[in-house]
Length: 71
Image (tube, rainbow, N blue to C red; front, side, top):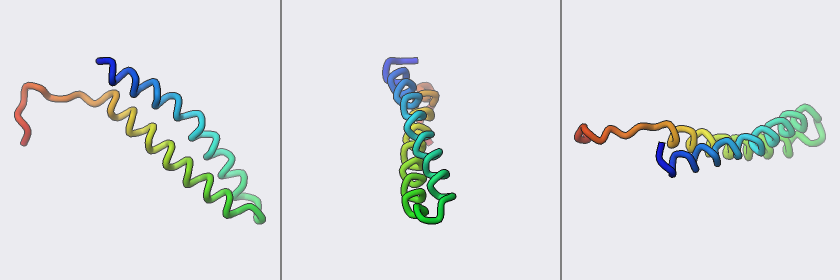
């Protein structure tokens, strides 16, 4: 792993905490009838944050084929 992959992996792990918290609070607020729109907003934010974490995990573990020409 090079330095960019290690940094991407560290940031991906760090993004799991706020993404999980937004998801947990979003599910909790969605159950309540009065704060349903806030729950949907929090779950949308969690989707964005967790998608960024997934992209960083993919970039950290993706191997480039240096020997093959592109198709």
